[in-house]
Image 1 (tube, rainbow, N blue to C red):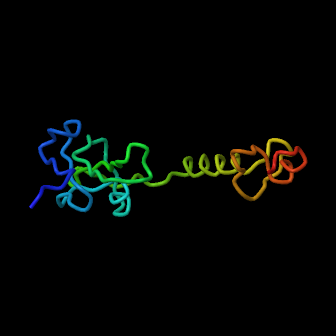
Image 2 (image 1 turned 60 degrees about the horizontal axis):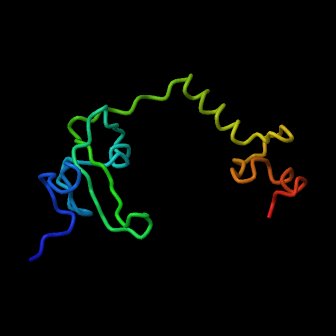
Image 3 (image 1 turned 180 degrees about the vertical axis):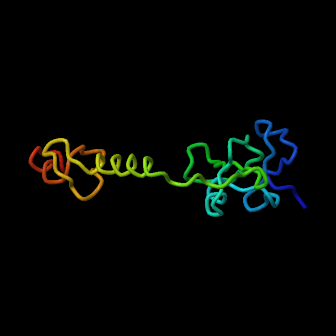
Length: 126
């Protein structure tokens, strides 16, 4: 039986990082999303391994997901009141039209830079 293309547990072929094919990583190694789903964060640890797979979405034809050790992960820091206020202010800024100053009620499209009514008046809307 042939070895899968991205099988390199010693890290000899792909940048010195142990590499596994899709769905073949050893137990105890998780991606950032998998850690977050468990209420954890990498806690500053280095990448322990990576998963590689072929993908038509990528310009290189290969996508990578980094893996972290579950045993070294720490709980996610709780949201403080200051962080909550900062996040609310940032979201408000993303919804506020620079042309008319109103809260559009949605995140302004980056390609327009204004709310939809203002972009129509300026002739930006396609």
